[in-house]
Structure formats: C-alpha cells, structure tokens
Image 1 (cartoon, rainbow, N blue to C red):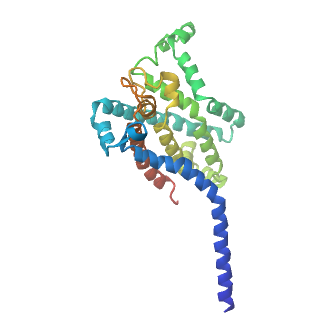
Image 2 (image 1 turned 45 degrees about the vertical axis):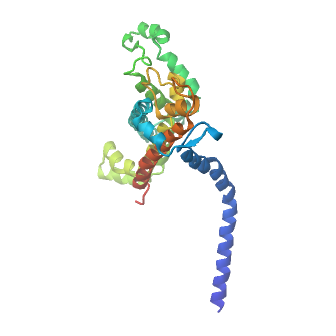
Image 3 (image 1 turned 90 degrees about the horizontal axis):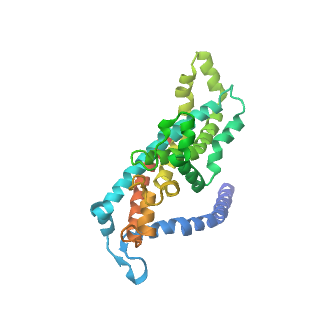
Length: 311
C-alpha cells in the first residue's frame, strides 16, 4: 500500500513537471506556428490558386504545377534555374566545404601557431553584408576597373568580363559565395576536431600512422555528424540563395539568365512580376516554393538519417 501511494505521488510529480516544461515551451511553439508553420501551410494552399488576392483569386487545382513543368513560358526558366541551383550547390560542396575541413585540419594541428588570428581572418567575410561584398567583387571582376592593375603585374590572362560571359558568370558568383561563407564550415569543423580525444591520436602515433591515415581513419569518421549537418545547411541555403545573385547580376540572373537560381526565379514570378508581363503571380510563385520544399525534404531527410544515426 505504501509503495502504491509513493508511486501515485511520483506520477503526480512527473505530470506536474511535464506541465511546467510545456508552459516554458508554449511561447516558442506559438512563435513557430504563427511565423513558420502557418505561412508554410498557407503557401502550399496558395499554390492551388491563381490571381493576386481577394475576389480575383480562383482555385485552379494543379494547373500552376502543370504550367510550371509544361508551359514553355515558365518551364524553360524553371528548369534552367533548377539546373543552375544544383551547379551552385555542387561548387559549394566541392570548394567551400572541402576547403573548410582542410583549413580546420590545419588550424587544429599541434604545431599551428596563432590559431585564433587565422580563424578570425577566415571568418571575417561572414560578418560582411552580402550586398556589399557582392558589389565589391562585381567591381573586382570588371575588366574596366581591375584590368589595368592586373596588366601591370603580368596577369593579362585574368582580364576578361567574368560576369558578362555566360560560360563563367555562374562559376564566379558561386566562388564569391564560397569565399564569403567558408568561415562557417571551417569553425564547425574546428570545434568538432577539437572534441576528438587525444588518446586516439596517441594510439595512432604508437601504431605508426601518418597524417593522411589519421585523417581518413580517425578525424573524418569522428566528425561524420558534422559533415552531414554542414551538407544539409549548404543544401538548404543554396536552394534558397538570392542575395548574392541579386547583388552581382540583378534579379534577372544576367547575362541572359545564366546565373538564374530558384530564389531569383521565385522573386521574379511571385513578387516582382516576370518579364514581359510584369505582374506578380503568387500562385505560380508558391508552386515554385512548394516544389523546392519537396526537393529539400527529399535531400535532407535521407542525409540526416545517414549521418546523425547512432554510431
């Protein structure tokens, strides 16, 4: 009887504790529902309508999605932006994240001096406004501005309209974005590498493992969850990228849509109005957003499961 009474008391305490935690979480939950979950669900709803607002809005079912994939007015621009976004993402994975882990390995080396100074140098571009860095790099890559200086030091091969050439414009924009954001994966990798136990490295030294073997057999497997998280963040951010293209090549993805991404296409169609009509189409814009959300889910969920599971 005494044990039963004690169990009832413990149960009441547990339920009371859960209730208190629920009260603490309620403001954050309400904030999430109002400013994130509800707009997401409402945008999904709007993708089945056409018209701007009010009485002009008409339910059209999946017609916006059909137009997006089958109507040349939209499909040509959408598939172009879709392919450019994947290219933009691949450049970030190969350049930004690979250099990030390389810098992190160097910065966490035993013989590395002035680590804090070099970490600050790498992270400084992250603190700058994208519009400012985009405009500065636009000037640097302009042969009219940088051409004379490059010619004086014998680098004539670099004097060319990088942002005006369809074959190089998207690559240059991608590399500028990598330059600005490389500090984030570098710092994340640095934190992960510093958390690896020194006992593992001492054991590797005893076994005679070289630096390359230590990296592949110890460091990389131990930071696997961080690799997955950085990959997910890169994937999500790149499929929502807009500001770097806007600052360097305008929202039209110049030259001739060569740098057009999903983000700039969504802005033109759903907010600003796409040439030649010039009238915003929120239904088509939210259809683009809905497809992008689906693509993100397909890419993020398997990666999260593969890299964040129990070791």
